[in-house]
Structures are given as C-alpha cells and as structure tokens.
Amino acid sequence: MARLHVNKFSLSMMTKMSCEKPMNKVRLLFFIVLSITLFSSGRLYAGAGVKPILEDARTTLDKASARGFEWTTTRKLITDAETALAAGDKDKSLKLAKAALNEAEKSLIQANYAEAHWQAGIPL
Amino acid sequence: MGLVKRTLKIKTGVILAGLLALNCMASADAGNEPGPDFKAMVQQDIKTFQAYYKMRFAKVEFAEYKNGVYAIDSASREQWLEMEDFPPYEFAVDDGEALFETLFANGKSYADCFANGGDGVRQNYPYFDSKKGEVITLELAINNCREANGEKPLAYKKGALAVLSAYMASTSTGSVFAVSVPDEAAYQAYSEGKEFFYSKRGQLNFSCADCHMRVAGQKLRADITSPALGHPTGFPVYRAKWGEMGTLHRRYAGCNKNIRAKPLPAQGRAYRNLEYFQSVMSQGLEVNGPSSRK
Image (cartoon, rainbow over all chains, first blue to last red; front, side, top):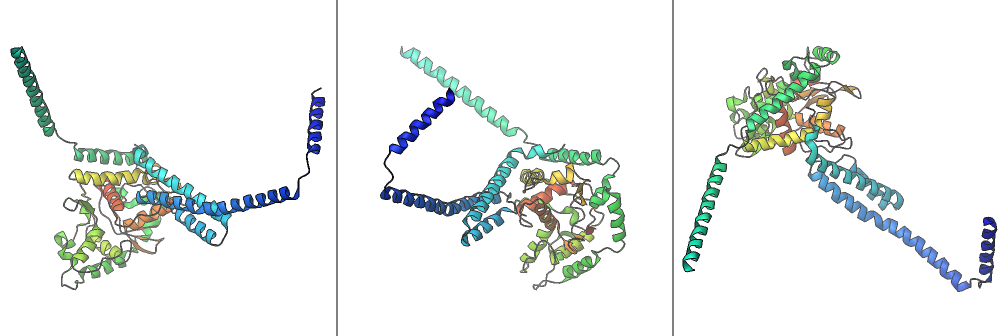
C-alpha cells in the first residue's frame, strides 16, 4: 500500500512538472551566468582566504615565540604557503596556511599550559 | 539630646581610634614577619633533585655524575675512557691559554677582569649579579671583559669563546661547584630556570626533565640520555658530532632543535637562568671541564 502511495505521489509530481512552461532562453542564460559567477567567486574567495589565515598564523606564532615556545616547523609552513600563493597554487597555499595556523595555535596553547602546569612535570 | 549626641560622637571616635591603632599594630607586625626562606627552599630542591638520581641509579656514586652519560652507561664509558687517553680538547685548552694571555689593544688582559687573575674560578659561575639583576655565566663574563676593554664580543656557541672558556675551566679542575642563590632576585632567576627545565616545549612536547630525568639512561633512538645532574660540570666540551668545541648553550640549542623547538639565543636570559638552575642542582660536584662527549 505504501509503495502504491509513493507511486501515486511521484506520478502527480511528474504531471505537475510536465505542465510547467519550458525554461525560456533568458532564464537559461541567467542560470548559466549565475553558476559561473558563483563558481568564480568561490575560487576568488579561496585565494583571498589565504592571506587572513597567514596573517593570523604569523600573529599567533609571534605570540608563542615571544614566550620561547616557537616550533621549528611553523615558520617554514608560512614561507611555503606564501611561495605557493605567489606561484598561483591557491589550494596548496590554503592547505599550508591552515597547517601553519594550526601549529601556531598549538604552540601558544603549549606556552599557556606550561605557564600554568609546569610543576606537574616534576617527577619527584 | 545634645549630650546624647556628643556621647555618641565620642564613643564612635574612640572606637575608630582603637581600630586604627589595631590596624597599625597589625601592619607593623606583618612587616616584622620573616619572608620566605629562599635558601632553605633551594636547599630542599637540591636535596630532592639529587635524591631522585640516587633512587634511579642506586649504584652510581654521586661524584660520578660529573661525567654525564658515562656515569650511568658502562659501554659508552669504556669508549669514552679510551678517548680520554688522547683528549680531543687538549688543543683547545692550549689555544684558549694563548688567547687568554694575549693582551687587548689597551694593554690589559682577561686576567684583569677576573678574581684571582681568572685562575681557578669556573666553579663560581654562573652567579647572580644583584646590581645588574641578572645571571652572569663565565662566557658572558668573558665577553663583558672584552667589551669593557674596547674589544668586540665573541660568538657564544663555539670558536674562540669556547676555547677561552675551556682553558679557564681547565684551571679549576677538581674545584667543587659553589653556585648559590643569595636573595629574592636571584631566587626569581633560579625559578625561571627551573620553570624552563620542567616545561614541555617543541612539536614533540618534551621538557628537559622528560629526557634527562624521567628517561635518563634509556635510549632515544640510538642515544642514551644523560642525567641532568652534573650537566654543566664538564662544559665546554669537544663533541664528536660537532667535531669541535662547543659551549653549554650550544648544547641547549641542539637539545631544543631535537624536540623541534626553536632554539633561544645563546646567553639570552632564558638559557642563562636554565644554566643557573642546573648549576645549583649540581652543587657539590667537581668541575671537570673541558671534557669530551659523543
């Protein structure tokens, strides 16, 4: 019975759709242009998104560094992200920038944790 | 009514005066209270630190800790003793002596800057300079001496400074480390060094204590980690890995790199305070620098 109901519903939908007016040329063009615009703006956003992430990574790393907790790997990730961005490889740049920010944040967390809990490291 | 009001005023005045007097007495009493006993706190730290190694390596004599990892690993010790037949740091001591005796452009020498002409003073370094409010290591004192005499400072990790330090250490062989924490400001520097020693850092999230206390004597890759007790006694060292002499701060930087932490500046405040803490913990051990390490 349930199946029958579904079939009935599908049929009714198909009937409704077939009754609609066919998409005219203007509409079609509008949707094509809209799709292209959305796609390109997404690409643009990906490129524009790298710089704030890199800036954030640099600022966070500088904070960790000032407290003596910079990791040896983070600044290289930032440099590599900048190089990739300059070479036009936005995907790679974004990936590296995110990794740099992740490391910078972890090193700052490490500094905060050490400040609050260093005595827990005394094995006595 | 007037009389009642006046009586009330007088009573209030008396109470206020009483409270004020009590407050003053309490403040005066607080002023007379003795502050924290820094020396006792440091002595307690030394006692527990050294007891830890006594517990970990019950068969190792205290005096042996001046030899680093060779105190606790017999196989490495044999190789090291063979190497000591022809010590690789001997030339460095000779070079250091020659440099030490070379006069500055103004006609003065290193001997003019140090107590006892710089002979047999290694065990007194590092010390806390209360006037400057900072820890003075032997290497910093050497460069301070140069600058005070119009000479350019030397690089801190290796080269001329390492050999000068090696020569000065050689004149103190057998002297017992006598690094103290005399006052509150010194205790602050000592505490910063202590905090550094026990703080995890780097991408590997290791502290000095993790490698040189918890797993001292065990293997990290192909190396056996040395006990932190006695770390500063043998420096500067000729290290086979370097193929030359290097200072303690060069080694600190190497350790930090190993755990993927960016090394801090040699003779910067952090490393000097760390050296201060480590030297205080090594109280009672003999100076045996320069020496050789793997």
